[in-house]
Amino acid sequence: MTTKIDVLVIDDDKFIQKLITKTLTTEMMEVRTADDGESGIEEAIKKCPDIILLDVEMPGINGYEVCDRLRNKESSKQVPIIFLSSHSSLRERMQGYEVGADDYLVKPFEKDNLVARINVLVKYHIERKELHEQYQLAHKNAVAAMTGSSELAIAMRFLEKSLSFHSINELAQGLFECTDQLSLECCAMIFANENTSMWYSSENTAISPLEKELIEMCDKEARFLDFGNRTIINYPCISLLIKNMPLDDLERYGRVKDLLPIILSAVNSKTNTVRTEEALTKQSENLLTSFKLIQNSLFYLGTTIVKNRKQSTFIMNQLVQGLNIDFLGMGLEEDQEAFLLTRIDSAIDKALDEMDAGKEIREALTFVRSNLNDVADNQKELYQAFKDSLATEVAEQSSDLDDSVELF
Image (cartoon, rainbow, N blue to C red; front, side, top):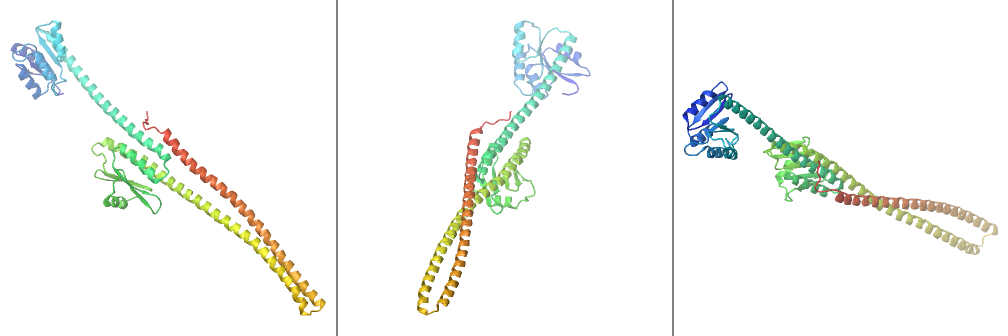
């Protein structure tokens, strides 16, 4: 609104026009006039006034029709309108109210009364405009807050669901479910380990060679890389290319850039966890395999020791029997024969002593094998408990999480 209050008088009575112009033309008001309804509408469209004084009875279209047409035009629908009429019945006042008038003044009228009513309506109009602007701003903020809360709820739901993911594929699928709800088209490179990268697309389509090159060649030290309506976001275990950042809606653009680090930070942490889980699982499987091999080797070694001891004892006994027979045919003196037999018996006794030490070794190996069996059984129980806990966690997450998660 200008410094002066712009008043438009639509009345075919020249005397009334002059009276109102003389009464209202001050430092605070300026007056324009129109002689009939059509010219009054044209004048209001040409320059929207701050208030309209409208005669009811005019040639051509009457004041009620003029008011109705002004209320149906966007530029003049909120302008205060005061009807001027020589009729004061309730029916005519109601008719004026029905077509959208704000006040009804009966001719002849007091100058001070006219000025007072104009001031009241102008003040009312200003306050209503300010309230409307405040309402629009509050509505906009409320919509933005509700939208932001909904988007934050999507991110929070992903953080909860990420606890139930136990593979890179599940993690990527969960990530793209989240970005789909945010209306983002993406592709991602996830490092399954230090030397292996896996590629995923939210649209379940092939990733173009250029998209792969952009992700691989971008500076991994930079968290965000913006170009056009595309953005690459880097974390140690994941690089995400967003193909349709909402540049036409800067508020939503800001919210998306605030949410994505939360989501991708969870993806990065979960990727490390998955890699650790896979490494532990593989290590457990390797340990169980090693335990079985060691058990079999120890069993074979112990069995071989027992078998060799029996075989050695049998060979020595055969040797003694053969020597006794051979001595009879050698013609040895009795003392010579006794000497040789004594030496042979002494050697056999020493060999048997050594074999008895082999028995201790076998018993020690048996003890080691028994302990390895216990360790292997415990490892099997731990491994099975770990697998069962993962399965239980997945089931609990699936049953506990509700698709209608809300923050408020």
